[in-house]
Length: 295
Ligand SMILES: Nc1ncnc2c1ncn2[C@@H]1O[C@H](COP(=O)(O)OP(=O)(O)OP(=O)(O)O)[C@@H](O)[C@H]1O
Image (cartoon, rainbow, N blue to C red):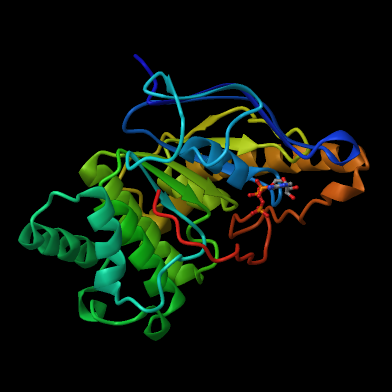
């Protein structure tokens, strides 16, 4: 079977000469249609670079990024991206923020159809009561819901998520994780989630693949998440298989982190690892610069 996404020996560096940073090296990845893959990595290891390569905002120096067997040449409506920042236009309501993206992807849809399409996705993320509100009137979690609804309303075949929930509090994060999973399984999408949270990966994904610390970050061994869906966070916590899997992943991350630390490259100081609940592999919030991108 042909993979929907395939990365073959992908490497990516920034800069030249003495200031060259080799961010990703020899990345190989196959994602099948309908799969949910989580990539768990350290801060600064190249996670966003990897998502940008999939989205077509950046291109590999060596190797290939293929979609349905064809090289990615740029962003497209077949890939919806959910960013960590909410990228909403402050002067537009929830409805109109989503409409703007829908207008771009479905120019031929009738106004009536468009309205019900937009309302359907607003309903899916439980924002119907806030439909006419402006971003400044919404909490961080609600804003992120708008950006989830916007990505989904564009009906992309592939959902690319770059730490979409890491700036949210635990409760909001939990409910959005559930919503994303519900919609992913309902609409049969393919999903790639970049996260720093091992538990989030185990709850949501079919496979977890670690990205080793940079420079020259590469993908580590994959971990298959053989836990039946729907997955209940509280039930998973009691599950022995889950505990074992979680320990294995965290131990792997600690090991690659420690090895990198020994190499003494001070430019890449690693975060503190916390092999205790919750399974995030580094604390802290980082907001990327505000910019509007739909796909
Ligand atoms: N345009 C660029 N020019 C030069 N260096 C860059 C550029 N973009 C990223 N880098 C560097 O490449 C490395 C990886 O960056 P990237 O944003 O992909 O990592 P990340 O894992 O997403 O980081 P974070 O977890 O902090 O969001 C970092 O060292 C960063 O400073």
